[in-house]
Amino acid sequence: MNQSVMPSRHRFRWSVADITVTAVIAVASGIVFWAIGFIYAPIGSVLDIVPGASDLLNGFYYIAGPLAMIIVRKPGAALFAEMVASVLEALLGSQWGGAGTVLPGLLQGLGAELAFALCAYGVWNMAVTALSGALSALGGFTASWMLYGMGKSGLVLTVGVVCNVLSGAVVAGVLMWVLYRGLAGTGALERLAGGRAVVKGAAPVVADPES
Image (cartoon, rainbow, N blue to C red; front, side, top):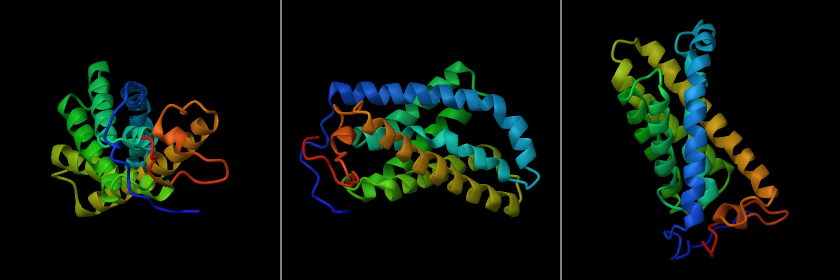
């Protein structure tokens, strides 16, 4: 049953486990971001039969923020994870270059954070996570437009933003929610707010009073 409660006054308090897990998510995501660069061009060239459709791949660049947030459930987790992931990607040798990697990371993190901030960091479900992925995608698209998109046609930009938002909502939102639920079900997240919120037979949609 979906319900909402006032977030605990302790919700802003980060534990060592919160910091460690967010960093681990960020590092793993940064490696994914870097690895996607090797397949982006060949797969993207096929998708770009419809100009702009290669942006369907971009959802993989938005995973860090929503995943960190639903697991750790602390304000700032999405921005922290996306920024660390993007910096790591840049250090590994991103095809987008330094500014082309870190600026999108900043805006993606802010977008992912915004979805949960709008709910006062008190509602945790698939819909809000999908919104987080979609807003992260809008942030990423905005950065890409500022860096590379000034000369593109209105049609390509329209297709691009739609593909970005769709990919963000599905890949960074829905799929990351499913991944979180799977991890939480194993008991691996029991020391974190997202793990403690999982009650057998009920969706974890409210703030953890102990977090």
